[in-house]
Length: 228
Image 1: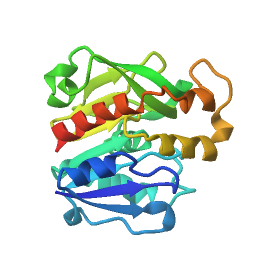
Image 2: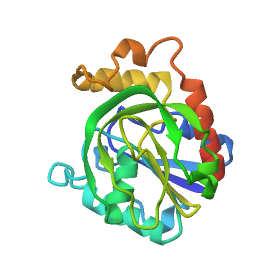
Image 3: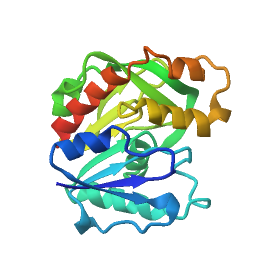
Image 4: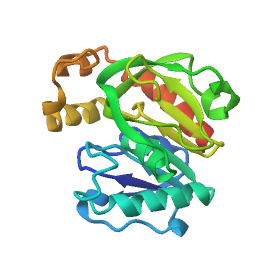
């Protein structure tokens, strides 16, 4: 399949998603919205991957591409494309379909467990999730479930961690694609967000030798295989 990745900042790329999809035989191209690249046409891709970023879905005045990006995401969902949104990307799916994106009660940054939601196994994507697994988080906002979405997962700090719409649309508030290099880039470029908090880890914990990158990426592989 032709996979198009929408990237919003130079330091938050597809990470482990790219080699996984390429190894599965998919053709992957990245659109750098932060660098002024034009959005693709709906006919240009079979699968849309919408990545994260430090901006809010509401920051249309600062980022002119946000409004047309939401329209493209909605068109992709309605057009039957596969759509995967990660962090900001999941919030963009929700917002494009009319769901609210608001400040979460607490900022959640670092490695915290995610639990599969009751009823999630009604979806193949929910069945791909373990009952409990480690995930990397870096967000201060959260989404409401868009119309027709099934709640898939939650954490102690954030109730809405994942949703599925049918078998082709998946929104993940958490990160399971993060590599050690990708996490280090976030720590470097967003260090101002690492302020003490109940659900905020320091750089040492995020990049600890025993940080569960491999275990999280195993979840990512299962989700990509199910979605693909």
